[in-house]
Image (tube, rainbow, N blue to C red; front, side):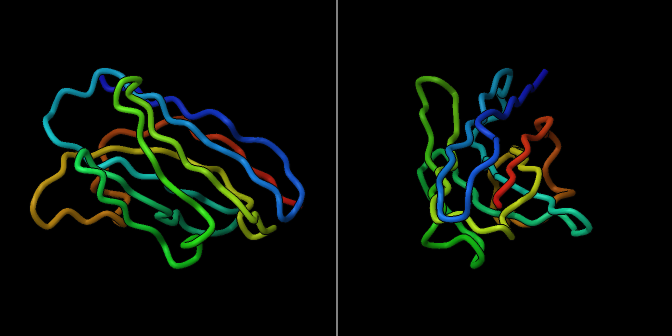
Length: 124
């Protein structure tokens, strides 16, 4: 079965940095689209960034220029480098994966069948 495990969350002062990691196992469905979502208190899930096997990345406007998604194919791991963190970045961060296909909807939570357990990020 597909398993995704996030790590790297924690507490940081505004302006600081964190790097999240998502380790994947059991994915054998061809080309992939790996995503980071977050859910802040009282808010809906927000798509933050995606990356596929070709290295194509997408970012939400709210994090563009501050966050960078990358992948370590040898370790089956995707990272999210978060710089210049703001209090509004406080949320539970999740990784998720779906098959890459024509017309993939990178922001739609329901299109992702596999999710990690989430990791808390708190910015104060």
